[in-house]
Length: 199
Image 1 (cartoon, rainbow, N blue to C red):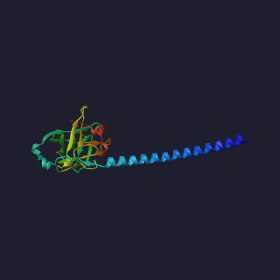
Image 2 (cartoon, rainbow, N blue to C red; image 1 turned 90 degrees about the vertical axis):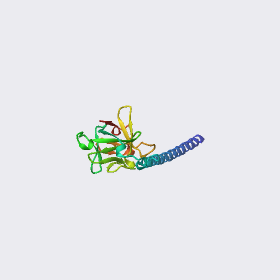
Image 3 (tube, rainbow, N blue to C red; image 1 turned 30 degrees about the horizontal axis):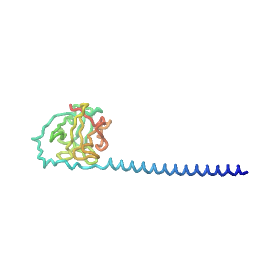
Image 4 (cartoon, rainbow, N blue to C red; image 1 turned 120 degrees about the vertical axis):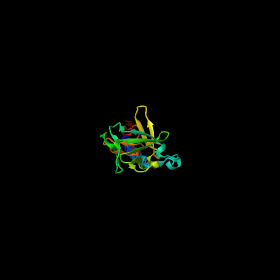
């Protein structure tokens, strides 16, 4: 009789212990989900929060003029097989038509490693806004300045000189697989669409 009583108590203790373990596991799982959710929200905020490069110079203050710029006639061909083009309606996109006048561009050097990309066909400069959106505009501004870097693989990258996410020059000119522009705050230097051959 005493043995049966002892077995029942042990069985009840085991059930109670199992219930407590399940409750603790459920609490930890909920806490983990909350923590993961908070981290994802923080990451989203960090990716969307664009900063301004305080070391940027003003074109007016720097005294940059068309006459002083070193100009190179180029076509920019992305590693994912698109020619970068500036359109007269202000849009930017990729095209497979290398004979299209809109792909004939000028790299205008305005400082060490700093350039502006100009389309003589449409009279517009490539620009990037604080959200990483590419567009073209008629006038030169700080938003039209890009950092030009040639990689060891022979491809070139161009990143905004004015805006950045985490470190200076980390918002890149890039084209998606479908030829549409990729937002600079969602591109990196390793993406095929961010790497260009200068032709």
